[in-house]
Image (cartoon, rainbow over all chains, first blue to last red):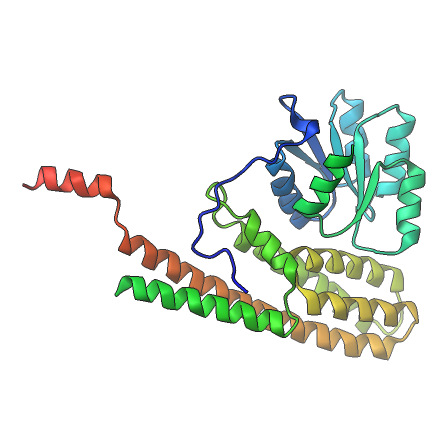
Length: 139
Length: 166
């Protein structure tokens, strides 16, 4: 097994349908700062400009203030407002952004809750380039 | 000589990673992180791992406090902390830590306090082991970067130096 040591990885933007228009924006909704760092990096590889929210309530406030995002990654478990409630509220508001539910839990109950709430897809953590590439290919 | 030094350091890094993979301490997700490292973010892996260490230490302290509380059994809070640690451990490929967290969560859901305390001891041990090994890994990587920098001085600077000092 070899690591990437010694090779200089030039940042490559992976083309995807959602970012063919300029200024495609993604909102990362998660209370975990590590998820922010990781998901920002992943999504910027696909050409997204990234923004973060610490919980569902902050995400909703952003939309209510007139912001719009092409893609949202929504964590399941967060303080103040969790991902299920936030997703339902956004859909009730008429938000048509693509929403990806994410969770560390691999329990099917979590996936079912997210789908009922109105996400476009669900992933267990960790999010990876491959998972995102498959999602963008199928939309 | 410096080329050999860099080669030795790269070999040491690969050997350390191979050991951690063989032991099941790390999984493929760590390699995925390395693939995200590039010229625009040359320290991406160490940054993410350091965030993981800072967050994990808080979570471990909170778990210890919750489980040592003999009067109240706040298993829901335990579950919340564990889910967070499972997620973050999965994200950096900390496979063994993730598995111990899952076992601890199982014990918590069964209200098995003694099982939880035993699992927490194992979790703290695994965390210390991973932290030490990854610090070792990043230390060697720093040495490799320094060694590579000395070996390949900037050619533009070299030319300017010759012009200024004929």
